[in-house]
Image (cartoon, rainbow, N blue to C red; front, side, top):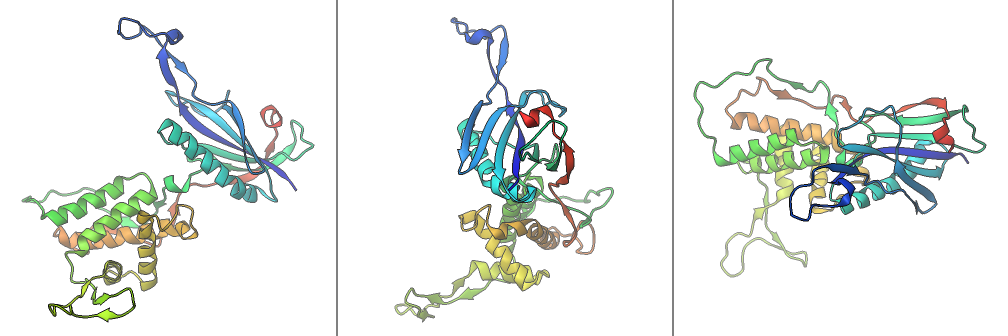
Amino acid sequence: MPTWQATAVVPFQWHMQAAGGIMPTDGSLPERLEPVSRIPRQSASFGDISIRMRPLGETELPPQPGFEYAAIRLQVDAESAQAALERIHPALELLLDDLAFQLQTTFIVLQLEILDVTEPLAIGDEREMLLYPFPQGYQQWKFARSTAMGTETVAIVPTLRSDYAALPNRHQQALDWYLKGIHAPVDSDRYIYFWVALEVLEKLTPHTVATPYNANCGHTIERCPHCDKPTARRVNGQSLQRLLQAVGVSPADAKQMWKMRMMVHGARTFSSPESTDLGRLLQILRAAVVALLKPALGMDAAAPPIVGYGGPAVGAFALGGRREVGPDDAS
């Protein structure tokens, strides 16, 4: 079975300390600071996957001020480069999460290459590789962002309203959460923010679904046995799905969007199979919120901005091919 070496390039911020590591004893600031590497030079394992970490050294990648590049190398046996990626992904994810928690920061993989290093291996050999190139690199799901193409129409030059007045509280809240979603850097955050906007807007619509109280024993109690008042109460999931269907979302997609919302409560993990559909559902959710916001803001439904869904979305991409083995690969 072929052996593959995955090399992840990860930026680490330099630690700045007083020159020589000695702080002035009088409490003043040091005259000079010097950078100290924070990259561990260590080896580890994840099952049968070997892991090595060190500074990247000389590279053609453009430098980032205040950072140095670490090379994380994982070696695994697999039938193909894609199969190797699927095997090393959990190890790389866990390693980056561990380092991030220790340093209380986050790490991104600016470039990831998977190269066939099956023995015998010699400098100059031409080997198969899979490359997630700089600077998009390889995205961890929780930090992934997709960009929908051709699904929105906006005015070339915006216009000012002739007379501005403060929005009602719920309208402003919904707009605030929607704009937070636009500004958010990753898809999972955007989905959560857009969903909050949807829940705020739902309170302004007649689409609420209410059902009688269902006891744990399975019996339905339509009226209180003591005061005879109805026990009907709002059902969140059904209400929001009905609202989504009212703006053109299919029942199947509305149900799936409600399930995706459960990631807020931990019922959906970042690596669950359903999560691969997040980018598509995000487009639908955004379009639904815009359709509901426009009348709330006094805007014509047919006028820009118009946000649709169903078009292609661009995220991380990979290049496959072959390249020569270099000295660093064979070391």
